[in-house]
Length: 265
Image (cartoon, one colour):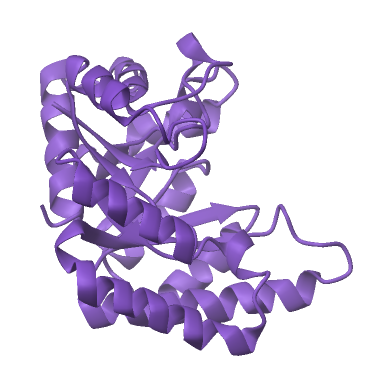
């Protein structure tokens, strides 16, 4: 069985297709999918899906590019709202996320200010994760050094580097910091030019690997150009199987067990 550890089925491209999406994912051996929140509204949408559909779980969090539109004075209010959601719907929520650092979308001339807002938001989200003893789903883009630095400073132990787009050196730095760091590979690992990411997928210990779609984005190479959905996580895992020395059966079994473990299911 497979587990799509990171998807956004509430996005408009997918929102009205849940019965179809679930039938398709189950047909392809994908047993579960985690709906990832990016702000208050999408966290609520993720919870609503998890409440309605048995194969779904939810996270709550603030994506860094969503969070940086907040004023710093607004951050405590938003954290309190997420805290309230967890209080009401804890049975459906398996992590805090996605949170982290995205320096790709920084507004020119405000880089320092927005980086600091992202940092403040990240640490506020980490405190929420610690309060509820939940793992963290981390987004990082063009922010390699700060991501590593702030992970270390936060003291967080159980976390997922989602949509892994770094190299094995980055993964080793995370694993040196925590023996509960996991690395989730998306359709990017299937792209022919993703050589560093493929090397990481081949080299990271099997008990730290996860797979995801990040749907509706990042469709694997064999269906690239189409709207992504949870069923396509099979294609990503198939590529990883070809990169590694373990048997296909062992890889599939272990990656599924990793998914259950990190999300406490």
